[in-house]
Image (cartoon, rainbow, N blue to C red; front, side, top):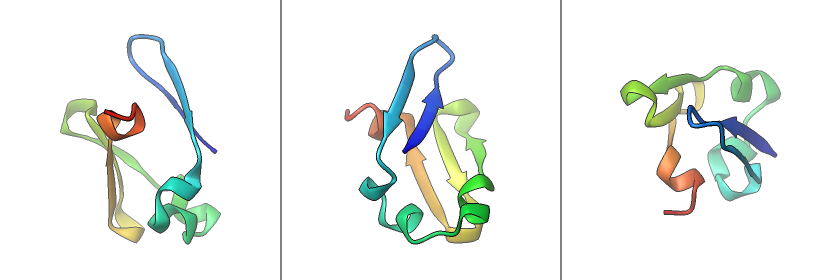
Length: 59
């Protein structure tokens, strides 16, 4: 599971299985991330993956 705490206090848990690149990544690669676009997304450089907060919320 990926656990994300949003700035408004909401907490979102989503299965890593929803994101094939994350599913296939090592634990070290999954832990190496940064926020993008002033917090509108998450980027994993090592696996070239970007996930928006909207995608995490199912929007």
